Image (cartoon, rainbow, N blue to C red; front, top):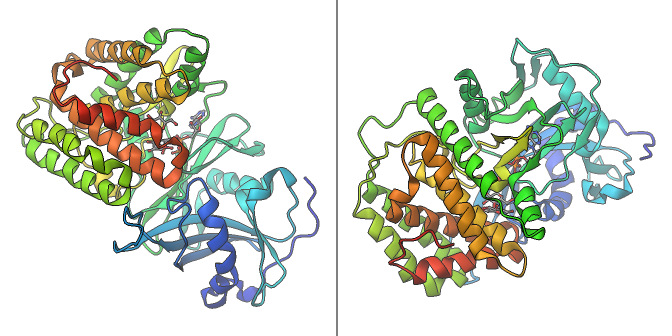
Length: 465
Ligand SMILES: Nc1ncnc2c1ncn2[C@@H]1O[C@H](COP(=O)(O)OP(=O)(O)O)[C@@H](O)[C@H]1O
Ligand SMILES: O=P(O)(O)O[C@H]1O[C@H](CO)[C@@H](O[C@H]2O[C@H](CO)[C@@H](O)[C@H](O)[C@H]2O)[C@H](O)[C@H]1O
């Protein structure tokens, strides 16, 4: 990397009245290309600057509200546009890093900043280090507040690198000792990815990594913006390991069994750390109504789902007739193979953010633990369908092993509630269809294969993937 002189923003640079117009054209082109931007491939129809904070004269922290049309099966969007708030940390000045040309938004073409190069400052080691420095020494910058666990001392000077994983957010790794996740899509409220691991670690749960520092904002509303956790050096996630096993023609049942045990341990710790539903078991009717509603939304957005609608609905109708004996409790909310990391032969569970598209109050609500189990079962299926030849029997064995491991620790077997499991798997597959349509259209056939199976075998009782 070569860095030439970096321009300094003028003192009036924080004035939203002209800052946003200067950046607007660049953001409209750059945002839809980002992996974490939910409106991928759709035009940004409006941008509002919600807050701007100077981190350094040539580095700004921004919260920007982007508006884009909702996905619509008809192509003509009659649905209300989506309005999401995104966290950006932008650098201004010359930035030459050819490997990371996606980091560059471009040159400002109008207003007082004309000619200035704008880039995603997370790619700039100076800005990445600045963030760690702020987290090491608690304090404020405008509406931003940096905080840390007083019992932990974070060393200075750890070299930063931006993680190049397929992510919904952006993460910086410091000296292979800590990882800072910056939430890209910001919602009002405390993010469960801070709240949950913090509470679980205090329960003595060794399956999670306790947050050591975090930062939040109070403007335009209170929200968590980033969390720093210990980095598990040399760990592989479950997805990478499952694909490696498949490629080598190996079974993955031992790992799946241990993963089931880890999930159950986390569920037990969650039930101890947070209130469980005091009104008795979750009301299946209400639950199924929520699933039907999500299906309706997905049908509106993804036309490929329409032929399966009746079959999918039947999964929810069947579940509505039952009442699960399982009390509702806090859960992970988006459990899949990418959310478990294996280090020193032990699985750790990460990313308690829940499904990023849902509002935070919904993600923080108590739910059935079967939702998490179904998420992981779907993930074995994803792995088995990620490459040709498809290996559904491999997935079936993983799914059985995972449930057995779960049952051994939790004291109840998810397979004993097949209707509920099917409903949650169907709900998850519908979510995945929507997720892939929005973020990775090339992947759509994977959840669609499950949709066709789940819809066409309404009487299914086995764990056939
Ligand atoms: N504590 C950690 N130690 C090592 N790697 C981690 C850790 N936390 C996250 N990662 C890596 O970062 C990736 C993205 O993290 P994740 O929390 O899932 O972010 P996102 O919500 O953006 O998808 C994970 O798949 C994993 O490879
Ligand atoms: O990145 P997040 O952890 O926030 O989760 C989102 O992205 C996941 C993909 O990266 C997506 O997971 C889906 O694809 C996985 C394979 O890449 C597969 O293991 C999961 O089973 C499947 O759901 C997840 O749904 C989404 O919320």
